[in-house]
Image (cartoon, rainbow, N blue to C red; front, side, top):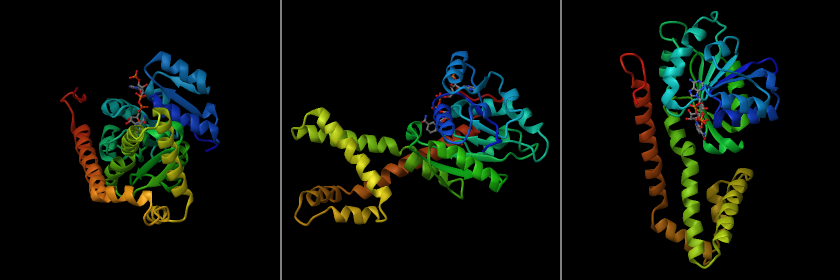
Length: 292
Ligand SMILES: NC(=O)c1ccc[n+]([C@@H]2O[C@H](COP(=O)([O-])OP(=O)(O)OC[C@H]3O[C@@H](n4cnc5c(N)ncnc54)[C@H](OP(=O)(O)O)[C@@H]3O)[C@@H](O)[C@H]2O)c1
């Protein structure tokens, strides 16, 4: 990524997390420009990372090889439509790769907003990070539109890897499953940890002890599963001694149909992801504004 110039539109949490990860790797601050409407945000981000900052989105992407759209999904249409002239006036073959981290925005909608239906189709990578990306331990689903070259795929992967593990999906509609599994997944684990913590305290442990035992157990189980060549099923079986305590706990999980519960949890999130995508992609006033 030595000669690449990168512009972030939006200097919030996700941008800061990616920039932090990128600077810890092989990018230097001079290659990065960040735009944000807030002067305070621009000052903070410049002071913290030493990157260039700008207020004018169009001017900031004029020379960029990669544009990362890191604004909230609700404002993406307005932001992208305003960027369209700057994207479309670049020479054919010289357009930037556009990466969006906005949850639920489909590449065809973003391409339309960026002028790709009437002008040149835009190379778009959709990334679905989750909140642990903020501590560089995210799980990030990636999808590339047809216009994305192999080189640009590699570039997108290198950029998002700064925030965690990256995995490509080949069909865009699989991004709804990514959203349901890893996008919303941290909250499911937080909820399970909440319940385990409370149950441990009910059994007589001090609250702080129950909290730390829960968190370290979650971390340890995930680390062990990631580092092991065994499946999680084998790992579970290996720690389940016949007649032991784990067997009794797992029996209750099975009796309460944990598989069916998780299937319902993910399906509900999946359905909502599809609804939101349809809603955000189609929500247009006659004057082109996003409805409140
Ligand atoms: N945070 C996560 O864990 C997470 C996980 C998955 C996906 N994402 C996605 O990442 C994106 C950014 O999320 P975030 O948490 O980083 O949000 P955020 O902290 O609110 O950052 C968005 C930034 O964009 C700025 N902005 C608004 N309008 C702009 C414009 N016209 N031009 C340039 N910048 C503009 C905002 O400024 P103001 O505050 O002044 O409006 C804000 O500083 C979202 O689309 C979200 O879906 C985030």
